[in-house]
Image (cartoon, rainbow, N blue to C red; front, side):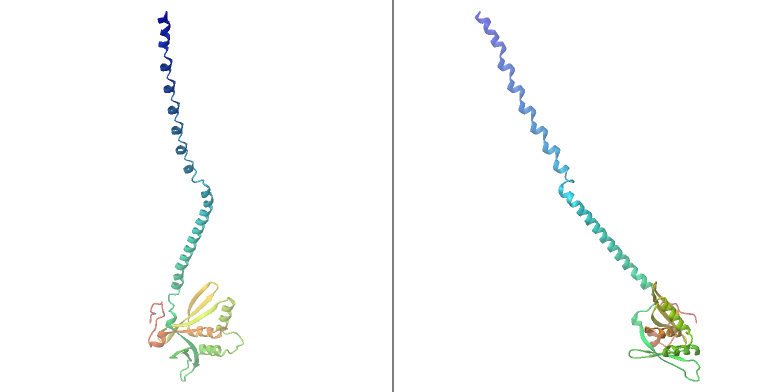
Length: 245
């Protein structure tokens, strides 16, 4: 009787078979910190970097800076165009010698040396050595120049007076009269004009250019190519091919 009652206690062994502490292992199996890894998987800072408060403030600043850079580039481009356009004006007047190649002169007189029937126009430098340049004109041109230099009134406007009035009516100024060439006894001149539409140079006879210059309300410079004073032969106008003889 005593042996039969002892067997159930040995077969149950409740402590060893259950082993609740080893089978559950709640701490090891759950591992909440390692499996979740909220900091690494979410990465809130890296994902929201573009939308951070600093970037929201600096975006308009970047736009303004970009606009300023574009405006600066446009200004530079405009300056470059202007710098490139400047030689175009020089090329348009490439036949015009520099100011150092000219001598300023005035009409010293209009004379008639008999028995020569053609008046002689005498131009003289305004500065030393005050050389003179003389050339003959027709009798009619001599009379016109005499009226112009003395400002003698006439009942009806002469051709040079009419031309001067037309130029004034269109706000065109006479910049200068230039004597630029010579072939034998024939001289070549230019009438340099400046108007609302720009500058233009017109080839003409010296007598016509001088007559217009002498009646202008504002004195017009009379310029002589230095070669005409220094050389005795033919002088080809600057920028022109030699004229056939």
